[in-house]
Length: 349
Image (cartoon, rainbow, N blue to C red; front, side):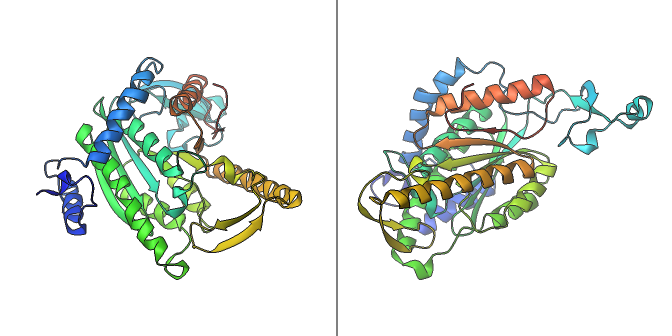
């Protein structure tokens, strides 16, 4: 019996390894796992069909390409790529000017995926991992339907898989299957206890991304950014060469605790558990203040790195979130503004 028919059991590690190697070596696509097929089919019916009628202009909404056709000249602005400065015009006008290029119809996009244990958290019906899979599935399918290529770097306890950029529905299925099969591994690691766990090192993932992407691409860093410090500079270096979008995942309960009485809180990264009294109004206020301070610091760090940010809540409607972000990118291309922007969850388009 072949591994993809056993929907009720986890695929053996050896067979999973064979699939990953086949993907990297350019072998024909293996049949996708049932879970990935069901997820993509659901996204195609519930999300992508709705987006088809809302997104107008596939190549001038979500991202810009790296075409060579000169479209316009304008004054240099903060965060512009200095390689696009037109020195002849700058010398004549005595003001720095940059070239604006027509977008390519074919481009490469990379998903830098943080699938560490903290993304398993969700206070409602969906966890951050579910939102991540939905976002990646929708974007990857929208891009590959028009011949664009998508690739991925998957981080769990370390950089565990690299999926080279390719196009096609089978490739999107392979990507979703690669994301989905991490869940059982994380549960086994959690049972091993705090000693076997450790904080996410997002800096390592970003450094690996910079080393593995030889050509300028659009890069989506999908993470909850619960990590050891030090990821800001690697993110900034990545943004100097690529067009980077930080897709920040969060759950409302991480920002504001309700009155639930005495409850155990577990650190998803280290496994450490602590009992807290959420009935204490003073404790809830302190928690909300610390969460707000972290939100401010995170947004400032993303702005300093020069990246756009899309915030996705576990309570968000994925269609509206992508449409809002698309409208923001379209306005920026039309006005020529190039500074980083953060689009909070639920922000109006």
